[in-house]
Image (cartoon, rainbow, N blue to C red; front, side, top):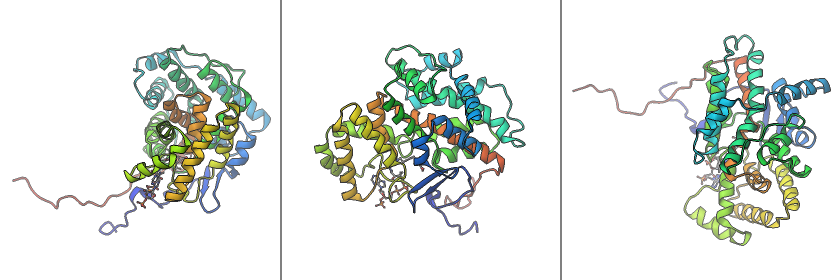
Length: 375
Ligand code: SDX
């Protein structure tokens, strides 16, 4: 009853709705996208195929994929006013703030009404979802470049999503092993049920607001270090620690001052994150490619120290942080990369929310002053 409700702080353990998009299974340490194990998708599928799967519910056939790729490749460039809006933001701003603002500008430019989204959510949301998926790399890549005084690199429509993303960031397509590690990270980041940013997107969608508002809100939720911001924070910690031999002492200090160790722990997985082994393997490939064994030494030293002291295991942000660093991304760009991948999952959830919508509006138990009156 409202007098004596059971309160679950942080909605921990609360099931708020059904979803057919993904299932996170801590008991079996597995993650399925539309029924497919994420490891199989990471081994065999492009990021485009995975986005298609999340949105459509099935993997594309050859013709479907060709049409889908043409649509995605045709929309990668940023409109001049979006670029100007980015240029107007100081380079001291966090890249997640730039991304949030740019998505907002893209939304304000989109004159297509979302009236009718409830009658046919897919028809209304899908074109906007695809536009965002295609354009987020341009925003993220350009923002990193302008911080280094470098000009915008135009998209190439002869490249797949992952190669083009790297091309737009670095001005060239790196070696195949690097592109592949990047693709794997995007597939792993694409979707993860009712995490905080996805839930945020669903809350906003549930008021019949609009796709861009929902995605902008999701970006805000993802920014925090308890969520997507952790991949950036992992790298900051690595830089603070310096080398493997200092990991234990650093950790003891950090734990003594009650610091949360970024990249460790998870609300749902208590026995390890199902995505970590796959991303760790990609990190190993990068370590070999760039001949940086020191990175893996530090990675392992901190992981082992955390295991002995707290018994807490890494989450996906732990291997992806150093992987993105090796690829050449700025530390502050890591969370925008997560956002660029997750926009596929966010928008799949917006479609699903609207397909059986109920306004999301929980209750609270009042514990302020008893009724009183102005003197
Ligand atoms: C993501 O939800 C998703 O699916 C998210 C995500 C996705 O794909 O969308 O998987 C992506 O957000 C990964 C998580 C990234 N965040 C971090 O790496 C930040 C560090 N992690 C922690 O703050 C924490 O583990 C959370 C926020 C991830 C989960 O927090 P919970 O479920 O609220 O658990 P808790 O904070 O209550 O921790 C339980 C215990 C506590 O100890 P006690 O008070 O019981 O003694 O474990 C300890 C915590 O202090 N603990 C940690 C710790 N994580 C948990 N102690 C030190 N460092 C940590 N990282």
